[in-house]
Image (cartoon, rainbow, N blue to C red; front, side, top):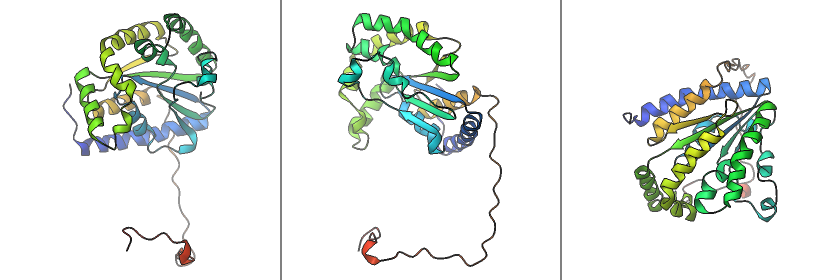
Length: 261
């Protein structure tokens, strides 16, 4: 494992990458590209943190984060991929899936949430579905965030002990601890059956989340070598008067300052 990066150094490196991510978003927007990035991995692997680091400085109107709940009764009666199609990117948009249709490849069979017939059909249908996506011009990238069981357990304990993070620890997370080896086996089958040049898989070591985020973001940026589209500098004209005060208006509408008197 690489030497742990100090927080100050990590934040500096991340800030530089986030400037490049802004350039990437500008390229996607002005070129009318459609980019779809899937984040998969074990529970507590760090998918949400990776997505947050990527989107933290982006223009909010030109990206979306998709994190779907379990399908409702109507969705259970649909074609499996149907509810995901509605969330694919439009022109000029970047969409990031915090888990995706690949639930059916790993989580569902490991936890008994689908039948073996449904699982096998998914492995047959998924490459065809993704080929349709790619042939229509959507750029599809798929990341698996890899974490060892000892580190996963440490993160579970951290979540259990921290009231701010406790909501992240679901009953499925706890139950999945018993299926660690099976999830690994299913992941390997998934990678072998669904890796294609038009929809590639990339595995990132996420035992150290700082290293993992930097590695993933740099790799993501490298998939777009012609992305450089720096925004032009903006020159603000000088005000022709003294700056005005906003004023707080009627005292009846004012929120008391914190801490309240």
